[in-house]
Amino acid sequence: MGIAENILTVKKTIQDGVELIAISKTKSAREIMEAYQAGQRHFGENKAQELSGKFEELPKDIVWHMVGHLQTNKVKTIAPFVSLIHSVDSMKLLRVIEKEGRKNQRVVPCLLQLHIAEEDTKFGLSLEECIEILQGEDFRNMKHTEIKGVMGMATFTTNQDQVKREFRELNRSFHLLKEKFFSAQPSFREISMGMSDDYSIAMEEGSTMVRVGSAIFGRRNYG
Ligand SMILES: *Cc1c(COP(=O)(O)O)cnc(C)c1O
Image 1 (cartoon, rainbow, N blue to C red):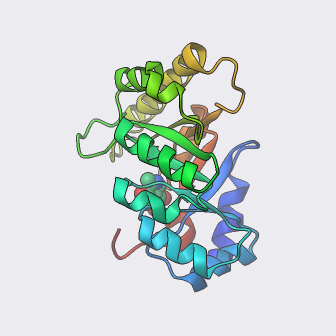
Image 2 (cartoon, rainbow, N blue to C red):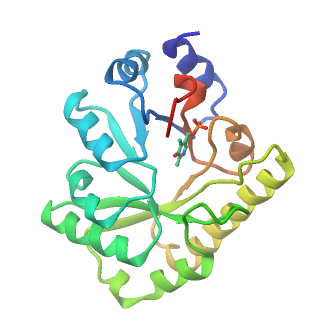
């Protein structure tokens, strides 16, 4: 099956109110355009350089998401245009995003990435670290970043019960943070969870954004 058919097939399985983000890392502009022509507008990348290159090259009505670990020295390449950074995993990174947002005279929408997986290889904050950031005066003075929710990646496992548990935990953290810090901010509403192999489980557990790569574009050679 081709990319256009894959988009339509995946879309049929996406619940109302859930945003499908096509993860196009390592894929060419031509492959992205196939998805674009099938109506897809939200795309995500995991490397800042690749993201800004594709932004330059591709139609300007594409909504670009940064989903991978972001080094502070790369923030400036994406700050002018990125529509959501899913992977805020430190106060240091948030400060740099704030600075680059100010330079670009815009508010950069962000999600806090929580570590929910069993492996310790994945990036992310603990719930306690999120609370610490959100309680801080530094954060409360920020005017060029907006925290719109949370993101997480489940353990890479065939154990569906474990994946379900981890997504449920992320959902619980989301609600706790919402109640504690964002009860007056309706825009704190996103839970970015679910990839090609687990997005159905993620939607059952309350996901509002699914990040689907290989189910749309086929297998990657790397990345
Ligand atoms: C690659 C990637 C995805 C998509 O993974 P697939 O299994 O190909 O759907 C989702 N989220 C992040 C952060 C990724 O790096």
